[in-house]
Structure formats: C-alpha cells, structure tokens
Length: 466
Image 1 (cartoon, rainbow, N blue to C red):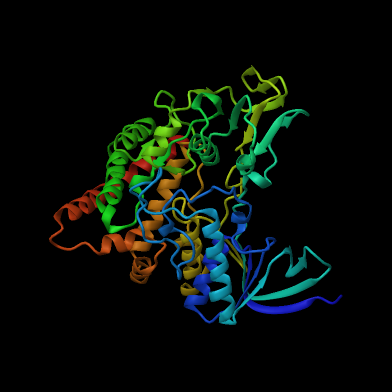
Image 2 (cartoon, rainbow, N blue to C red):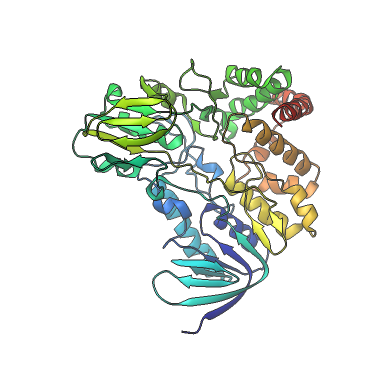
C-alpha cells in the first residue's frame, strides 16, 4: 500500500499537553499548518492512561492551551482543596483537550491529526491498527513533545521483582478493590503515592492499615502559595518575596531550605526527617494533615524483591503475608530524559523553561519560534530549566528559572506577551497593582530588592554542588 503524503509547516510528535500547547500558539499567532501524530486514540497524552481519581495538583488556571480556559474560575467550597482555586479532574482534562482538537484545531483547516499512529522518524508514520503508512515533509520544524518521557503508573514496569502469589496493582486499580486486604503497602513517596494514600483515607481505610514505603522524603510546595488570582495576591506574591528573602539571607543550602520552610512555602510530611527529594509536587494544608496520619512509614531504601512472606529491601528484610496488597506508585512522572538545547536545526525538543510549568513552557517556546530569527537567540531566551530529582537540584532549577525571567523582562514584546497569556498567571497579577495598593507595592519592592542577591547566592551554591 502506497504511503499517503502530507506537506506541512510543523510536524508535532505527541498530542499531549505540551504538544497541544505548542500547536495552539502556532495556530493563534501565525498562518502556519501543523500535523499532529500520537499513539493514543484521543488527544491528551498521558491523561489517557491516568488513574480515575487523579486531579491537577496546581490550579487549573495554569493548565491547558493558551486560547481556551480550563479553570471554572471557582474556589472549591468542599474537600481537601477547600478555599483554593479549582483543580481539574482527569476526565475533565481529557474532555477539554478533545474539545480543543474537535472545535478549534480541526475546524481551522490547518491541522492534520493522526491518532493511533507512531512516528518512525525521517518523516515516516505508521498506523498502529493497520498497515497504513504516511510520509510527511515538515517545511519548518519537527517538534518532539515526547522528549521529557512522561510516564504513568498504569504503563509503568516496576524496577523490582515481584514473586508469584504477591498481590500488587497500580493505583489506577484501587477503586476496583472489593475485599479488604490484611494491609495496604504504598510503594513510592512521590505525588502518586500521596494520591493513593489520600484516596484510601477518603474511602474509609484506617490510617494504621496503611504502610508507606518512602525511600526518600520530599520537600513539597504549599498550594496556598501558588494561586494566580487577585484574591490571593498577598499569599502568592508574598510567598515569592519571602522566598527571595530566604535565599538571599541564607548561609548554606540546608539553611536556605529551612528558611523557605519557615516562610510557609515548602513543607514536609515528617518534620523529623530531612527531605532529600524535590519533584515540584504541590499539596494543600488539609492534605498534609491527612498524610501525617500515616505512622507506618518504611524507610529501608528501595524494594529489591517482594515475596509472599517478605519484602527484601536495600537495607533489610521485612515480613509480609499473602493477603497484603501492594500498590505500585513508583513510576517517575518524567523519565530521565537527556537535557539538551531546545532549538537544534530542524528539530525543537520541548522542555521546561519555567519551574515545573510544562504547558506554559511549550506555549512560550512556540512564541519564540515565531518571533525570533536566529537559533542562538531562540536558545538564549529558552534556556532549559532542569527538572529536579534530588532536593539540591532545586538550586540549579531556581537559578535557571530566575535567569530566564530576567532575560524575558528585558524584552518589551515578551513582557506584553506574558501579561496577556493566561498560562503565565503571575504577570497579569502583578500588572494590575494600583498606586494606592501600598501593601501590594511593598511586597513587590521586597521581591525586587532581593532578586539580585538571591541569584548571587544561588550561583554560589551551584559552585559548591559542582
């Protein structure tokens, strides 16, 4: 069968959140054409495989594509997010991306969408369901929106052995549990582990029946300080100013984290354990209170093997029984992708250019692609903000983020774009300050006064870590 041929300006590999956010800017700010290829049957990327009770952990106002609001604009009045901006559920996000594709992208006449297809490289695409093939010529660029290798529990293979007779499931399957096990063992200390624990507690499980394998404890961000809405200006921008002050006045990396924690920006589940991990997870104060109910925390390194009667770990062995239910939450949301320049010849590799803000980053990269001429200039304005793993990675991440923010602030057109783009959140929040709002102005003065000293301090810490 002869391959069907297409010629477009941009070939976008992946219809996940980053690919969709990139395509949205290309369509909104130019007359270019795009072809989007994805292995899922619907747009949304990893959300196709997400667990049924998943929600965003940052406000919906930060998420989606620039041209269409995801947030309901409401403040939650019930639950563990009470008093804060709404968090979209997995089904809501899937419906949102489907609407963007069906009612915005495809009716434009400038988008070709090939679901259930795999990009093979060299402009070749193959269907997953037949022997149908396609050939694509990209006049401008090939955009790799899969570079960060997002993974989810349902498609993850554990990196430990599981013997026959052991009951184990991904957290996706928790709602299917119909018989009470002898205990639940949550494997993984990241955001999915947090979600599994909270779900169990909300669904009648006694905290003492939950055992939590946490090889590393994490610094977590308080959601109360990440609300991009004028009603939360003091909490959100006040936290930004306090963080700058904490960095600038710190005497060591540990002291810096302690000061940021004291300022109410970072939290840890167990205040007696020093966190060694930072993945950018965000939780509310009520969620934190729930997590602290779990007293059976297992800290013996990573699991090597699970057998019906024992758990073999890096630092010892623990007894088990065949009725224990292990819940795998060990998948890393973002794989160990190699950090590389974003613009490289005829390829754009989508990565983060702002701290843990992937969709904003993709939209910003698309805008820079359309408005800057040279690859050198594009990469200067799109320095990669590395995704953190170890707690000290926060130093490098924050430094790169602040350098990008400074570079953007020097460009008048970028200041305007940031102010008008809904995914930015903060620029519009700050630009609306009136002369009589002295408390808000004082917060911004604190932020400005400490910005340069904090960058200098971060660069000193980076030298220590090198």
